[in-house]
Image (cartoon, rainbow, N blue to C red; front, side):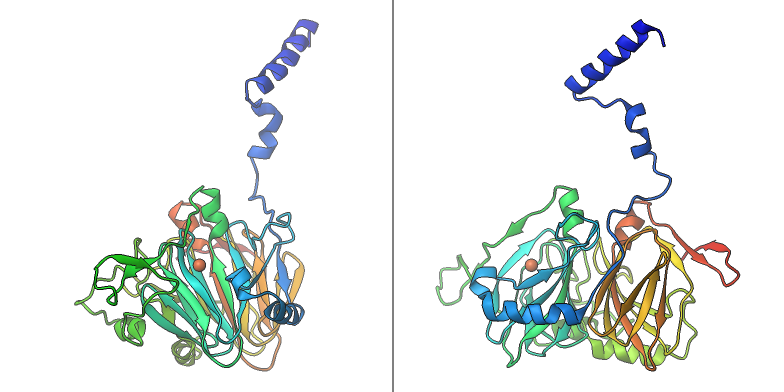
Length: 373
Ligand SMILES: [Fe+2]
């Protein structure tokens, strides 16, 4: 290169920096990726490591200080951020008997999957939902919710939210100024309340939506400011009964007997951003390898086994949590002598809406097929 050209290029570099420009040719490789760049890593958190620490927090961190007593999963690939994948936030939470978290709402959508205790409850938009092991409770974006424990033993659940996704869209907003009209004041004016007054009948979600294929036509299915499932609780008892009916089928070679908790009014995902699923792997069952552009986290409800993610083996057992980031080949194996049930949450609905969802599976002969549904 002629000296003048070299000098001109050097000046261009200096000018670009001063003008807040980037020379594309300098960073092209960082833009034109041949495959999705995963910062999040496949990782497993052992219940046996975390439960004792959760009990320490229960003894030493007052609920008044923390409001929500949670140990949050920090993916080792995400520089200490409290995110389990690029799009998902998750935690184990514990509430002692008598504790209550004040009512609030936020733009991230939230969910709870219950692991321990049967005295927990969440009030969502005026419906009090009792929580028992294996139940899934939804608090979609913008719904007022408060929760607590009016039982005799601690309750523990896994929270999953789309916090990093919402944050990346610069759309995070939390509100704590709940108010409702108070019949006691007779003024008709809303007054601030620390918790919601329960106003829905007992079993409301299940009363309205608990029979698949049957939808009441005398109520609005809009419950909150956004569109999402109007059914706020999915009981393990009903899920288990569904598995009992489905276990006679071969299931998917990639996921065994996989079910999704759906919006009863649409048959689609319960929230715009996340889908919630559960799969049964029968004793000795081993799935074929697959990869998806979506990221997932799993919580082991029952059983023991392992998930291999691009050669990394994640052994799992009851109450463990593990994550499989996007576009990594992975396969599951039930290594026990009984059923294994894996609860999972995925950002797949987000990727589908944006036209970014792809999935591939490895056939028995080793060739790769696109997975299309
Ligand atoms: Fe919340």
